[in-house]
Image (cartoon, rainbow, N blue to C red; front, side, top):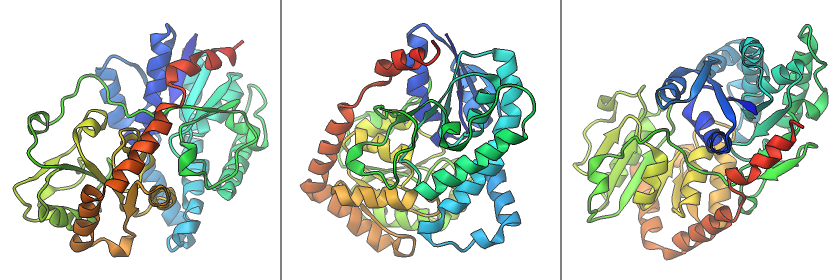
Length: 387
């Protein structure tokens, strides 16, 4: 079987899907990854067959903000509207347009797409290829799901030639692989397409090493900090975080991305170590607490490792409910945008280190994640869709 795996070109979108791609390849199936940017370069260097599809998230953000200024001032609970416009309209059209010739060239038997590369579902339907939606986080709010289904339906009507594209929610494909543990709750209702639970797994390509100091003996706790792989513009928040952590008796590993100048962070303590990028899958087993932006990939990876977490939701619509889910489960704390000060971060991380209840709750969540089906266990389900 030949499988095309489609993802938007950002690590937080690509990496959650790669354990499934790896399981398919290990089972003897041919896998082609359609993505772009730096993730495409890294995957190609690691030996994956890659087709470039460069639907750029940052460009979509700029376009939506220019063309729909009313979306700039939404409250957090309404930010799904920005996401629906970005992913369901602008990026969906880009992915559909760029992926269509890739489908003609590669002729896959199955398309597996990360849930926000949803234009892949339209392109696959038009090509007569079954599509599977691969979750990367919680199900979106029902209004966002409905808005995206309507946008994809309209996109399918505009296309010429090929098979008829389903209308309504069925446009998303034949199956959803759900990586969001039930213990964390679901903010929205299930879609009317079949759903299979899947164990979320942190993933890194190749054998990229962790920083050398982290591999040796660690005389004090280690706090891993990340505000996502696109951290430009987050310097003020990161500065407060690192200042607060610098006053604790901990070592700090901060992944700041390639778009942020370390000079913007000011003077840092001697135990604060900055890296542009680290293989999170290899970092999680070596740290004690994770401080992050509430992104689904980091949250799930840290949860699977049984780590207490401090979430600092900033912009994206999913970060705020993700932070609330951590707090509700007792395995983490959160600070809202106006609450992120050095003192507040210092106190929150100190609580996570000293209060065993958070670590115990994190351990229970990790055990529930470990009980979910591994990617290798759903390969036969995916094969069955092509019969």
